[in-house]
Length: 358
Image 1 (cartoon, rainbow, N blue to C red):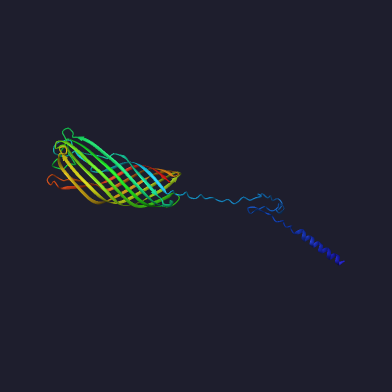
Image 2: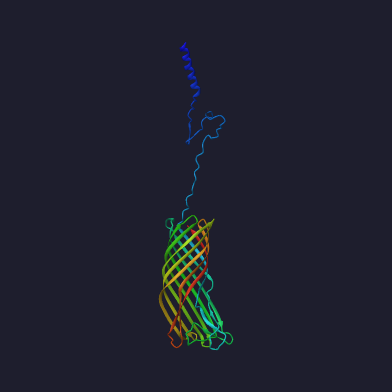
């Protein structure tokens, strides 16, 4: 009797344990690509709906575009609408009265606003941040004028030697300016942030500048008298500078550039003066000398860029300190005594630049 009760108790314990133990779900076969299917719906609690797709999408990857390559060559052409200026371009004093008392206004020339150009070529080895550039700039300007003495007055020539041709009735003057500058620079560009780049450069500059001032006088002391001053400067030296470029957004950017130079200049100054249509020589003097000329250039403007083409509109100033030299005679008692006049040469220009990277 006790055996039967003991066997029944064992059977009831085994049945209860079997009912409480969950049935293990069969293993899920892997899906190609490493993503597994969700477990069977029977494994989720009642009321829970499985919304997992049969195949999980691959994780999203953010593709960062590589930086555009920097093209190794840049060619540019720049049109300049420029105006050079200097002092001491006067050729006569207009006196309304012939009373041996100099008075009145000074008649002088003023070089016109004229066209110039600048061409450049830049090489960036292996498309890097260092560069070698060559630039050539050419400019030319001139002016001419004629004037007559007012009724009852006279002209005092300012280009003639005192004591020979002191007065005249008419005057015709001409002046020209010829400018050639070559720059070779070695530069380095630094990207300071996403919107601003800075370029520093050092290099050499050579220049050839020629200036002519001449006048013809007639009447009173002058009989087809002529006075001519010719100044030629050949210079070379070092220059250093920098340029900043600020990207404004879209295709537009702004730039500012500055350059300082020190040039050793060789001068040739030649003065001649004649009377009686060139038959009488009054003055014929040459002067050759060397001196150092400081130069300062500044520029600013806007640039529009489209792919490898860019267009710039800018304004610039150039100042050559003590570049102009002229000689005049002091009086008629000591004919060989001279005085030297020194003045600056300046240029301002509106620039239109077209460039191509390739």
